Amino acid sequence: GQQVMQIPQYQHVQEGEDFTTYCNSSTTLSNIQWYKQRPGGHPVFLIQLVKSGEVKKQKRLTFQFGEAKKNSSLHITATQTTDVGTYFCAGVVTSGSRLTFGEGTQLTVNP
Amino acid sequence: DAGVTQSPTHLIKTRGQHVTLRCSPISGHKSVSWYQQVLGQGPQFIFQYYEKEERGRGNFPDRFSARQFPNYSSELNVNALLLGDSALYLCASSQDLNYGFTFGSGTRLTVV
Image 1 (tube, chains in turn blue, orange):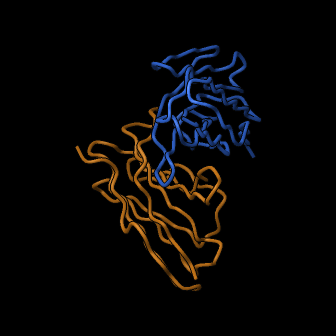
Image 2: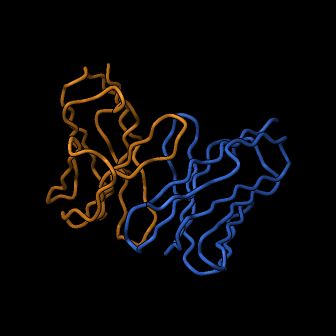
């Protein structure tokens, strides 16, 4: 079945440093979504990428979708303590179908 | 506007028992999905419903079942509970099948 791999599993940074998490799917995706889950919380939708090579920005967050629509990345510039949480990518193989989540990258930011 | 609401928030059950979890989607959202999240892992897909019809089923045993009601609310049923069913059960709704999902706060199920 479809698999979504995400690296790294953990990332510890000093406040102000940059952070990147990478996501790779075993199959070509229709779209990819990114979610953030705070400790003890639930996943919160960040963004959806649909087009090959698409790049979207949300303030300090930059999301990319690979040309082959099999990989994606999330980059945070100048991390803040409010960025703490686990970032999940979730792939959709057929539009409108299930989300297949990666294992997530747990981000810790030291002030 | 209320978000996705799930009940109960916490539940403790004994092995072999049955459990029903409930979810009310955001008003106007027609798609409801259920996910199981074990501590330290990503959510795993269980079911998806759209317009009251099952649109997908994940790799879970037949002990798991779900349905969506005319008002788009949904319930997840799990029979013959096992210790391994202990997890956070998340409900997510979307206004359409091609939008991102809004997750509820989940039901924390503990099976003892």
